[in-house]
Image (cartoon, rainbow, N blue to C red; front, side, top):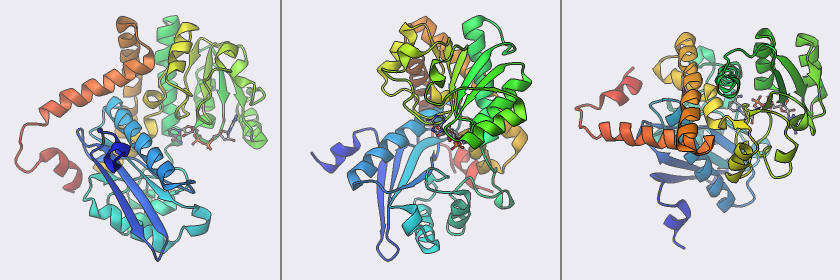
Length: 365
Ligand code: NAD
């Protein structure tokens, strides 16, 4: 196997950064820049091996291409990993070295927060590069994306209601939420305000107590919440919750929530459809955070970001239409939607434009 085989033939660029004095070892994977610069977070994690890190960054970068394309953004897909335990090796020196390396990519890759990195880290990177989002509001950042992600999920649930029950309203519907952390909490609020009944579950008892205290919701055991009788099961904690052992226990009509990678395997999308359960593909319904952070590139405007997030409703309706008409799963329909957009807009971008307007719109400020 050659090193290029490991990347597969889809990736544009994979870059390895090394700064021995700080212990920085990082990989940036740029999957596609057809629609624009590749945006995706930096994951700082003690991967068991360098190959594990490489596989993860490639998989995640590819996912970002699809997420940005479906969200209608002028962005491509990329991701970065820093190999190591952030608690042990993260330092100002390491982050600034990383920031300088990011800067060498000239804006082909724009970073953001992910597991193991924080907003403070993004502020530190900003001292070395402007190709970073999710910085503090004082630096032109958009703040915590979670309320915006929750808003996108809420609108996505309305699209699900239209598809499943031919009605826009969520009033009177029962929604079981797995994980009432940053996104889940805000989702509870929006649902309760819309007249839905919420059943909340979390492994963190304080998080559940907060939801009960603030919104008077019912509760369920975290390991059994997927099996409660409800209209919608909303995974808002970890991934791989839809799998062989949980699907037969689901008693809902819709699975839709913020968690990434909800299906353990792609075939589980088919299993859900066979069980008569409508699935809102995670990378479509949870794109609010990405849409919000992407707005920073134009000079953050919360109103404009909110309007863009409202597109999630229309996109999901379209994904469901494609799924119905082409008799494919909603996940496959979302992938097709993304691939079509990349193909069509990519073709238009073949026209040579003096000065490259679209990019200077972002970097010309
Ligand atoms: P968070 O850590 O604030 O909340 C997750 C909650 O889930 C926590 O309260 C945690 O205790 C709970 N939890 C963990 N394991 C659980 C289990 N087995 N059963 C029940 N609860 C469990 O994270 P978040 O920012 O709210 O993100 C939630 C999910 O949404 C994650 O998968 C994240 O990747 C995804 N997501 C978040 C955003 C965002 O803007 N924050 C954007 C896109 C996707």
